[in-house]
Length: 68
Image 1 (cartoon, rainbow, N blue to C red):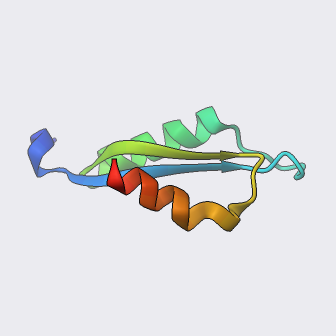
Image 2: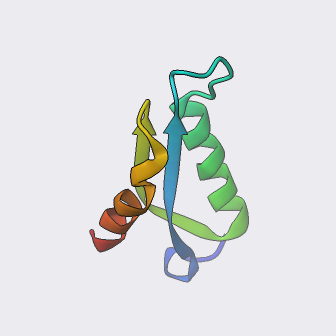
């Protein structure tokens, strides 16, 4: 695995709508994204979670996470 400084920084995005029957839990999504990051040379530097919220504000939430 490359040193932390060589990893590409990314923001993990977790979305779950409680209005759907086929939900994937936030914990499973987080684990899957973390494994993907490790396999592909990325480092998750922050998380954005939309739990039972509209995806309409996605862009604003991601921009806020980038600004941190």
